[in-house]
Amino acid sequence: MAKEGSAGFDGADRDADRIDSRPRWQPRREWIMGTLAALAIIAAVALHGLTSNRTPALAGTALTPPRPAYDFRLRDQDGRDLSLSELRGKAVVLTFLYVHCPDYCPVIADKLRQTDEELGPERQHVAFLAVSVDPRGDTPAAVRGFLLTHRVQGELEYLTGSAVQLRPIWEHYWVAGVAAPSSIAVTHTTVVYVIDPSGAMRVFFGWQFAPHELANDLRILTGHIRDRAIRARTAGSEERQE
Image 1 (tube, rainbow, N blue to C red):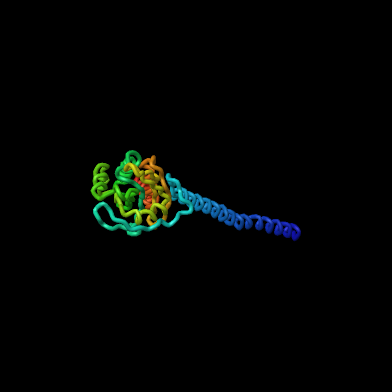
Image 2 (image 1 turned 90 degrees about the horizontal axis):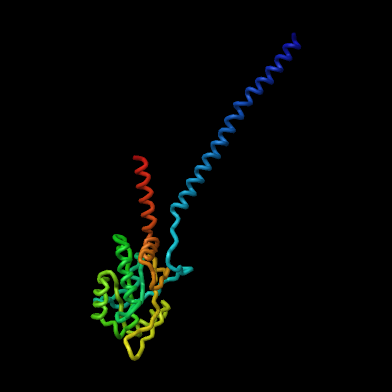
C-alpha cells in the first residue's frame, strides 16, 4: 500500500507539476505576443506619420545648400523705399526686368500674375519683387504703365535705382545685363528666384516656369501645403466618423 501510495503520490506530484506549469507559461507567452503586436502597431503609426507629413519636393532648381539672400534697398514705382529684409516672414519671388523688353519680361510678368491668382488667399504670405536692369529706361511713369498693362499693379513691386545702386545687386544674383548703345534693348539673364521666409535663397526658375509649380513651391516654403494636407486628413477623419 505504501508503495502504491508512494507511486500514487509521486504520480500526483508529476501531474500537479504539469498542471501548474501551464498557467505559469501561458500568461508569459500572451504578454510577449501582445507586446510584439503593440510594437508593430506603434511602428506602423509612426511610419504613416513620417510619410504623410513628408514635405513634397520643390519643382524649381534647388540651391544646395540654401544661401542667404543679398539684402538691398531701392525705390518702388510709387517712390517708396523698400528693402528685401523688410519682407522677412514672407516668401519672396525675385526677378529682374525692364519695361521696354520685347520678349521675356512681359512673359515673366504675366506668369507672376497667374501665380498670384493660383495662390488665392495664400498670397498674403508672399511678396513679388522685380528689380530693374535698365536704370535709364525704367522711369517711374514707364514702370507704372508696364504694371498696368500686365495687370500686376498692387501685386508686383518694381524696384529701380541708379546704375551704381543696381550693379552690386545684379552681381550678387548673377544677373548679367548689357544695354545696347544704339537701342533700348537690354540683354540680361532671365531668372526667377524664390527666397524663403527666413531670408534664404532656396530655388530658381527660368522664364519658362509654370505658374502652378511656382505657386506650389511657395506653399511648401511657407508651410501652407502641409497645413492643407493636415486639414484634408482631419476632414477625411471626421467624415469617416460620421
